[in-house]
Length: 415
Ligand code: B12
Ligand code: SF4
Ligand code: SF4
Image (cartoon, rainbow, N blue to C red; front, side):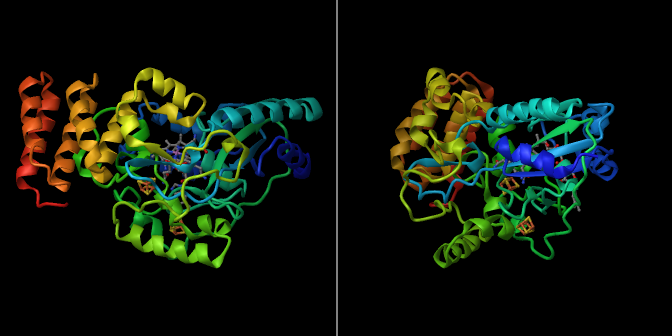
């Protein structure tokens, strides 16, 4: 049996902040939960999440038949408080502020596997995020952290701002013990989630989650969730930003703690939008090497709304934001501007409604234009919508324009 200290030393040298080892036994309870989750349709349109994948994910030996251990690793990605947002900007989830973690962690896991092979022998398969694995359940079993009601893996040192990967190996390594911690009576994340995606406790309905809606969902965002999305354009951090064990390690002084408690109240009221975590203006953010040369806590929404494919490729090369297609980001920009945009957004939105090549973007622009017109009391917005309705050929866009016209007629001002 290899002492776990040997593996931990090599993992830390490879650049990981956390490492723990678990046995490569099947995850029986988790498999049942995973299958129930899929059968309830909570994976939404993520067609790659299948029952067959769930069965495979719950047994490391279906991947490496003679596996004895799973080495779970964590990369902490906190990169400082979110700066105060400027007008007409949209928020990006923290994990995507810098370079794509899949690349950085993949390289480190590859190097670690080679080192293990050279020093200890054995067969190794590594995964980060995209593998047929249950990254969180494996990490929980190894004692890297524990699962919270927001379904994230919480760790003692970094809360849930930790990205996960693992190596399934034939080496027999001394296992660590799971951590015996739970959320207790706390329900802050469930209360704060603006779309009601969390629950029953420890589960999520992806179809309602802003992270899913802005990154994975290809198609129109259901009307029921558009307002709740607020100014998020890529992912969402709310259920982590309100989580005490997640934030505690990162709130260094009394002032920051008090400011965070103030934020909790606004999140619990779902007051839209909570404009940034701190009053600090945007500027260099201290932190992780992943964020050394690219820091994007927020995106200029007027730019995003008219972004061309070439600009998209150039701006988001090497970042996790590339997971969303260019038109999905323009769609997200329309929703966010509809929620928080100033009167300056009206003209660009009207242009997007008439000219965007993608019907989903044109439809969302119509919705947003209706909201902007009403919020800023601009009467000619109805004429612009009427004109677009007369020239639009796509039925789904016409339906959105008609709805926008109706909402202008019906909605009370300043909703
Ligand atoms: C699909 C997916 C999503 C989906 C579904 C999320 C979900 N909760 O399942 C969507 C698109 C919504 C999503 C969003 C996000 N994701 Co995601 N996602 C994944 C992915 C690819 C698969 C997850 C999966 O299989 N889900 C199905 C469910 C059934 O599995 P599970 O959540 O792992 O569940 C296990 C435990 O929760 C536990 N469990 C379940 N019920 C219960 C009940 C009790 C009582 C207990 C104790 C435990 C428990 O056992 C389960 C196994 O069945 C993983 C990577 C991977 N390969 O694992 C990343 C992953 C989970 N995502 C990650 C991240 C960072 C995010 C976001 C924070 C990104 C963002 N800021 O926008 C959000 C968080 C939203 C949230 N609250 O979960 C990280 C999480 C890191 C961490 N510290 O937890 C992962 C692990 C990627 C990685 N390798 O780092 N994601
Ligand atoms: S990521 Fe946002 S929308 Fe998704 S569960 Fe957490 S708070 Fe809710
Ligand atoms: S906010 Fe509270 S309930 Fe939610 S995960 Fe954190 S500790 Fe658990």
